[in-house]
Image (cartoon, rainbow, N blue to C red; front, side, top):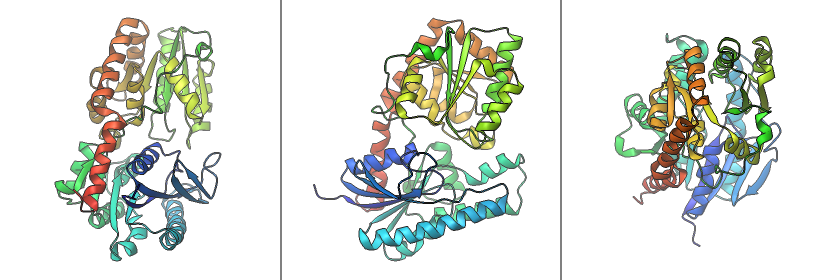
Length: 400
């Protein structure tokens, strides 16, 4: 089959294929006939090879320097990443060539790697995964702008300005691209984080995961300071100690910078006997736990970032027909609709009461789960999203 074009994807914050969105995009493009190369950091335990070819995707990885705390540490991390990415991009350019570069944020600095190639006539697609200015304010726990925030906004504007096409994950991100980046609507394509039905699917349950309890509550996701797992643990404490519910086990799956701190926090709250932290696990373990779970949780608290971000886990829960408890966030409600019960934002006790409500009603669990499954099948699966990805590439290459 004749190649549809050659693509280079740049990712700084996660390894591939661990970054599931990028991996879905890369494999979807190969299905369409594109030749795809990816440059990304090495993982700690997985994705450690300097170069490998997986499902016809050629992946180049570099040794990443992990940032400590503070702006200067992050600046050094990004600076060394840009140097290593630039070096690998030159290798790929002369060895294999490419027609399109797709940059994925954070950070909003990868346009610097792409800029020389854009001057040579290559097209640039910006895949707008994250909101770096909002992420910074959330971690800083302040909404007041300062010099760092203004610098982040500047780099974001430059990224938008340099891109030929912008991919947004939802309508809220599209609005930001138009307002802050002055990107015309006709140059923005929404590609949602739809779950891949080949990866996220129902498999036989494993009753042992319930640890002898009638109800398995399940969380999967990153464990950073803004992801709400600490809120979830406080809800579990209220459920166990105040509501006197001992008929549940909570499985928390995934890794992140806060994992060890959260394990210690569970002991401090005296919920470690009803909580299992699995760390990062293979996909087979993910789908087994998802299939076994009785209900799933999205404890991301209300912040300016979370309110307008689409959570991958929400859609994955829906894909296997699981009922959800989440805080009432704008984009979560747009994604889940009536497949979730919504707690008052950041109210851990109300979150626990919503969990208890689902625990006590198998019929409600089935009803919400079926609503979610139908929403995925009808409009939100990756099979729908990848068609929009193809539109973005056709637009960039002048084929639309």
